[in-house]
Amino acid sequence: GRTDFQALQNCMKNPQVKNLTYIVFDLLALDGTDLRGHRLIDRKETLAAMLQDAPKNLHYSQHVRGNGRENFHVACEAGMEGIIGKKADSIYSPTRNGDWIKLKCEKRQEFVIGGYTLSDKKTSGVSSLLLGIYEGEKLIYAGRAGTGLTERDRKELEKTFKSIKRMEPPFPLAPKPRSNEKITWLEPELVAEIKFAEWTEDNLLRQASFKGLRQDKDPRDIKKEKADDEIQPQSSAIEVEEPMKANDNSVIIEGITISNPDKLIFADPEVTKGDVVRYYAKVAERMLPYVSHRVLSIVRCPKGISQTCFYKKHPGPGSKGIVTIPVSSSDGETEDYFYIENIAGLIAEAQMGTLEFHTWGSRVDELEKPDMMVFDLDPDEGMDLNRVRQGVRDMKNILAELSLSSYLKTSGGKGYHVVVPLQPAVSWDMFHDFARRVAQVMEQKWPDLYTSNVRKAKRADKIFIDWIRNGRGATSIAPYSIRARKGATVSMPIAWDELDTVAPDGVNMAEAIRRIGGNDPWKDFFSNKQQLK
DNA sequence: GTGAAGC
DNA sequence: GCTTCACAACGCATG
DNA sequence: CATGCG
Ligand SMILES: [Mn+2]
Ligand SMILES: [Mn+2]
Image (cartoon, rainbow, N blue to C red; front, side):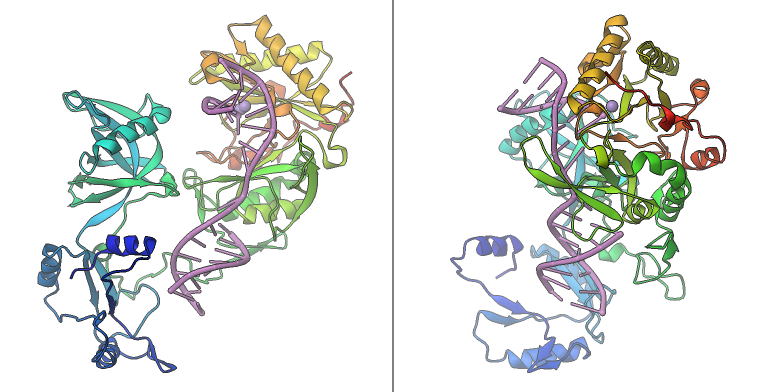
């Protein structure tokens, strides 16, 4: 017979085993003796002898010496999956070291689906898939797959794609549609397993065939895979230092051991994990009054911002430098949240890959009485910066009419944040309600400029006055927090008279550090004793 | 990035 | 002892 | 109630 991985999987699922044969290819220990230090060829000799009189569903795995290229092609012709090449004299290694190499007949790997085509003749669903792989944070077009799709696949995929359509290609370098076909672009969220013959010189797939959708694979982790036969043999004289070993280039900052300080977190400008940690150490004194003793949600990007980032809002076991606080939720259940108290908390978080700190609007000692109101101005895509700045001035003036002084910071993204310090006095309900009414005043006064509606469809050429940050349990980005975005930007407090000269994404980590050498634009923030009535 | 599980 | 894998959020405005 | 949104 012939080996068939698919058949084995079916067999495992349906335990009504029929003609299953066990083919043994190595012998690592015998009667309590470890054989891993013996040469492969000797281990196999021992194994072969043992299997002389074995039952017929137990086989010794024969090998062939030499003629690798020819044997590989024969194996593929015979419909095998591929061959394993092994150095006869090598001892056993539990890890990949090149002594054994896997040569697959079929090339297959996962690709991100970035779009699909509909041909004008086929009435039934998707005609082909447009595939990509990530290089850094760019999705590189890798070719199309039009075979391997059953009629049912085509229809189901079309349905799945409905919710992730987009106007612009997700590929910086997008393919052009052929005649008689229409391309629909998709958010790069789905991952397909694709079998293919080879990569062409143009780095496109030849004979790509769809094998199925892959769940539980993050699209951003999809990169071009190298087969064993493509990996350059590394000359042992030269630097053999790609992955991290147990190597200890750790540094200690503020008493906390920082692992992998040289790992690159931002590509442009180049910012390492060590830079992030040192940044938070430097801004700690300015930042802590706004971030300490407030319930946190954080964003971690331990592999850098081009890879998957995630939110964390519960402490989890074994967290260092943070304080756990039980908080009762709306339905009466209580859940653990966390906050930090000092610079050690800040640095401990940075060590764990935290980039963004988002805070509640209340302090933990007055959890039910919020004291920081944030109006987050979110402009529609591509809005002129001067209009955003006018929005900020309008907001400041509305608040001033209500006798409230406010403070300005960049968001690190597309808008600004206007922040109102308050005495902890009123309930979340009152606070939230007040924020909504302020946003509605803006909306009513200048209906063509502002909206208080969160829906993007209602935002056409307007600024969304995001008042929703001001609910219990909602958070907003802390002053001085790095943003997990291109450019290593910071949500930076600035003075009102800097509004016209500092863009929302105009302060990055380096600029922020430069700025804290000067005066604190929010110096009197906590001297305000204003409160809502 | 970490800890547990798996090899 | 080394590698691999799972895991790390959720409330609520809106229609 | 499902979904968009931050
Ligand atoms: Mn915003
Ligand atoms: Mn917002």
